[in-house]
Image (cartoon, rainbow over all chains, first blue to last red; front, top):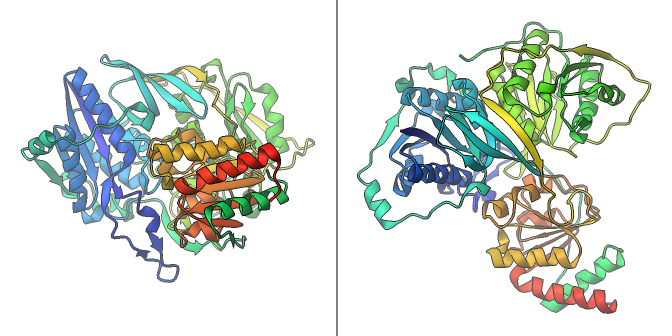
Length: 265
Length: 341
């Protein structure tokens, strides 16, 4: 049986996240009451797991580190078809950078124990780093392939995957157990179904704290993070905007005139 | 398991750049990073050291010196012809433990974005993603600037070394070549005892469609304001009508309207066209840092209060799905008849 662990992150809804601002004086987040949703790329990681499960004998565990509200994201994964959900939820984990996040997730994966494939989205929409997958792999001493856009060969001990490049791809052979981070080209995530939601009610979400992992509290969260935010500045634009007004036709004509006069079109 | 590497003393180690080559040609981003590394190293009164891995790279080291390197660590072997994560990581980690660099810079390329975290986690140090500036604070700690929440965050790695950052092509300018500069080449052994659990078998290049973003004189970029695929096709239609390259923001990529390779900004491409037209995007700094080099900037957005209007030369408040068909009709008239408005 193929044992798959999918790491998912609950992030502020990317459609509203541009409303989050930092108060330049107090350096506190403003409008940060935006609802949490599953990180878009993690949906593709879960979908990859569910498609593998449909074709091979597989067990899918979803692992998330986050605040209690991230439990909803784990629940959503169960409703989509994951077998088991684990939420690593501890105040000590707060303020973690990618390194401390990957470290804590790697400890949780070790506690889960047996696994063949760890799947992650390529990047998170809020912090935008792509570090967590490869750093988990490093801490677990596993091979990793990032930016996986296709899995042409799977099922055995060696898989073949295509990893996206700037233009084209690398064909990579990787031996299980391994960590793969996935791009959105890999698949189209399924939608929630009513029966899935009903079935998920019978599935338990295990909630773990740092004590369950047997690591010191100082190794996770802000304390375990090598990087810190030291300063915050606002960016002043050098441009002075001229608004073009009028009816739609007038606006279009006026814009074209401006651009034509400047020799741009 | 977590290997901690603390600063050993108060003298500064070198500033490193992990250079990248494809088919034996050094990438532009690597040369740009060496130029910036030179400035940082001069401030610290230390040297610039470049790590270059690949196969048959003899002819490539001179340009690394010409843009500012003092020393090049060269691992040259047929085993390294493609990027191989395990062997690349092992060589760089071993060397970094011996030489204790102060700073390590890596290009935000598909290779760099995988290799940098593998090296950072192995060394037990921090890594800042896709920086748009690198400067020292008053204590000579590297401030790694990244856009977030409508401002610029300075991220530092105070306790651990090296201080690591990835930077995209085009963030720093191409340094001037000084062909008289020379330096030391240090050949590296390629270890034989590497686990080979992951192997690049083949690299396949695919030609992207349409006008390339970096060389286009007009760039049209679309965002979530397109609303749906139909709206997106209107934005693509505008790009087509102007013979412009089509770029995107992360929300548009997340919606699946267009591929990641078209994303402009901090973690995507840096463009500097003569004309930039942003449609249905809110002016998030993560995107806008990729277009600051544009000569003339236009934004079309239905929200008059959108921050994008603070960052462009011309603004039009309108629903792009209603406005674009009319704009395109007028462009067509202009192009066909050269109507003077």
